[in-house]
Image (cartoon, rainbow, N blue to C red; front, side, top):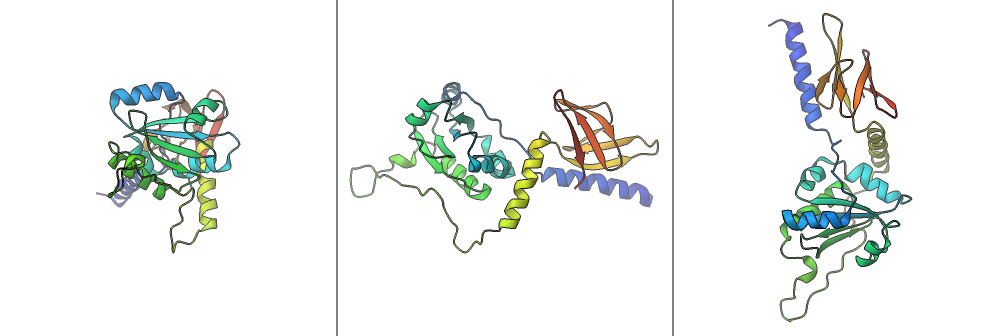
Length: 244
């Protein structure tokens, strides 16, 4: 095997491995709570219900930082996920006693409350709550009786949970936030490599898929590929993807 060919194969393998570790997956959100509850009852899956507003800064941080995390996305497959604009659905917000944003409630498939997250949580902490909910799906936390009485225990959860000994890295947080904003603007498309073959026909690797000019990718179509960027045309915009 020639050095050129072996180098080419190594590049392809590296690109696939990098894309395999990508955190730019997207949770499949529903926007109708009533139909989501009906679906959950049939599938016996618990629900994630995200109450948000369009003006809420920390709601957007959840979208850009937490919901794009690979583990959060993986666990979301065991839930029915719903986003509810609290200002457009005040009755639903009142029903679940929503008083601040973001508030994420976890429901059992029968509609009973299993857990609740008030305020922003990072990916690791949020995934931990998801795992706890899945573990306690048939035993809601708010209904666990104390050991020595017949009364129900009321478990109060703090709005913000701080991990002791972990220093908040503002620079890393801002860098990650900017990257996720850029991903959202680019319709969650990522360019990880460009290959120029002997015929000098450039091929781009977008989201792990090898595409050339004219190929469809998602709801867009590749319109141009150069040695360092690719253009994808959608009905409403054209985005330019570059290699970081």
